[in-house]
Image 1 (cartoon, rainbow, N blue to C red):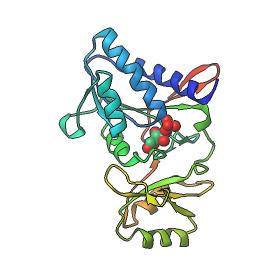
Image 2 (cartoon, protein in one colour):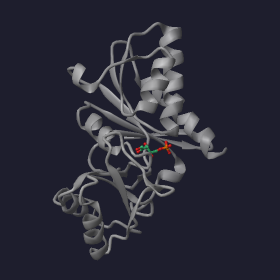
Image 3 (tube, helix red, strand yellow):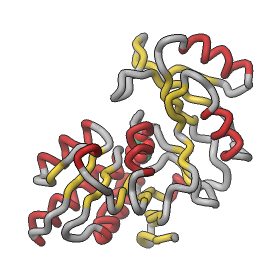
Image 4 (cartoon, helix red, strand yellow):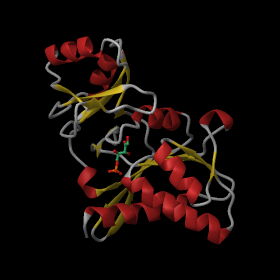
Length: 224
Ligand code: 5RP
C-alpha cells in the first residue's frame, strides 16, 4: 500500500471516535483531509450533529464544503476530542508537528481538548524525534538575529521559503526549521525554545496525545 492509501485508512478509522453532539478539533494536513472527508459522509448518512473547530483555513474550507458545522475556538465552551496528523512520533508518543505550518493553532486547539488522537502512516513512527526538521513559528521582527543565535547553538536553522519569499503562517509569522538529526531530550529542548524571545511556538508536542492510530499494510493499529 502506498503512503496515501495508509493515510486514507487511518483517516477513515478515526472517524469512529466521533459521535453525535461532540465538539471536535480538526487538524491540518493530507491525513486529516481523509478524516474530514469521512466525517462529512458520516454527518450526512447518520444525521449526527457535531461542531468542528478547524486548525487552518484549508481544513475549515474543506469541512464547510462537506456540510460540517464549523466554529471558532473562542465560540465553543469545550472541545471533546481533537484528531490531527503528525510529522514524527517517538516511542514515548512525543511528536513533531508543523510540517504544514499550522502547529501554533494546532497546539492551541490540542491543549484545549479533553482528548487528542493522532493519525499517521507507519513512516511517521520513529525511535527518536529530529530527523524531521523541527518547525518554529517566529515573529518576523528581528528574526535574522534569532536565526543567528540558533545557528550559534548548533541547531542548523533554515528559513522556510517559497522562492525568495518567506512562507507566512496564519498569523503572518515566519517559519524557521531546525535540522537537529536526533533529539535525545525533547523536554529540555522544549524548555530552551520556550525561553527564547521571538519564538511564538515550536513544533514539539509533548505529553499531549492520548491515542495514536497508525496505518500499516495489514490494517490500522490503535496505540494508547
Ligand atoms: C501541520 C501538521 C500536520 O499534521 C503534519 O505536517 C502531518 O501532515 P500530513 O498528514 O500531510 O503528513 O503538523 O502543521
